[in-house]
Amino acid sequence: MADPQSNARLRADAGVPTSGVIHVRTRLTADFTVIPNALAQRRGSAVTVGVAVYILSLPTGTPVSIAALCAHFTEGEILISRALRELEAAGYLERRRERLPTGQIRTRTYFYDVPGGGDPRTDPDPDPDLDPDPDGPPEPPTPRGPRKRPVTAPATTVPEPEPEPSSLADADPRAVAVLTALQRVDPRLLLSVREAARLAPAVSRWLAAGLGTVQIVKLLTEGLPDRFLTRPAGILAYRLRETPLPAPPLSPTPRDERPAVLPFQTCDGCDKAFRAPEPGRCRSCRSGSRLRAAC
Image 1 (cartoon, rainbow, N blue to C red):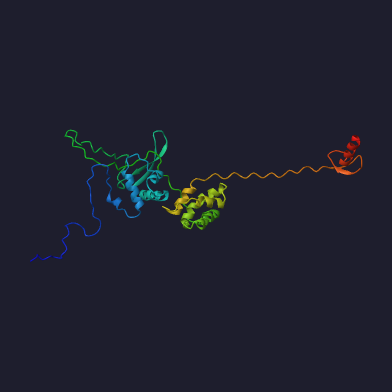
Image 2 (spheres, rainbow, N blue to C red):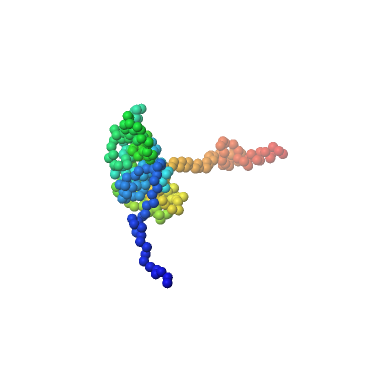
């Protein structure tokens, strides 16, 4: 007689969750960075967390300007700049204006793994490979990841954002009309009131440089990508950053110069009136004189 078969489900391994993520961890001994959970699990923008983790993984002195971050990430300047402002408001990022030994004023960028972690100028990061007891035997150094505090940029890295207009009331109506006309050329270029107020000053500068409305719309809508990786306002802001040179004024077309009208003269031979610069004989009298002379 065969053994009875049971249809009961096998008991799950103890400690393994029945849902959610299951971590498969690898012990790292080099090339890793310790990230606080408060930062890694920060609610809000994923771009902000990604920028913070990337900056923490960089060695001290690595440029962290908007241009450098845009070269690494696929996000545009608008999202990167917004992430830096959020990190600065949360206390992770700090910008200080400091005087260099040469007398120049530069803006240095400090990044903290924990907000309020101390003054980087008065709280130096000790060398972990040195034994704290000089008389005792040295302990073998423990591999550690890259330094996390502070990340210092030697020069100006993140420019201060320009103040944005609060509404369209103070914007140039001609600039607003140009921005409104963009969506008629490309429906994807639909802007909010706040975005139009922020872009209007740049459009006004283009108008002041001598560019016409049709020319501006053409420059802003030609060659757009098939897929936008950011808001349309970010692409327009990028194109409006550099004002193109205005076209040279067209030189007036010279009018055809008409010959001067000769005055009337009275022929000395037949008393007929004819036009000539000086008194004398008309053409008929001159021809008759030549014929008589030939005979």
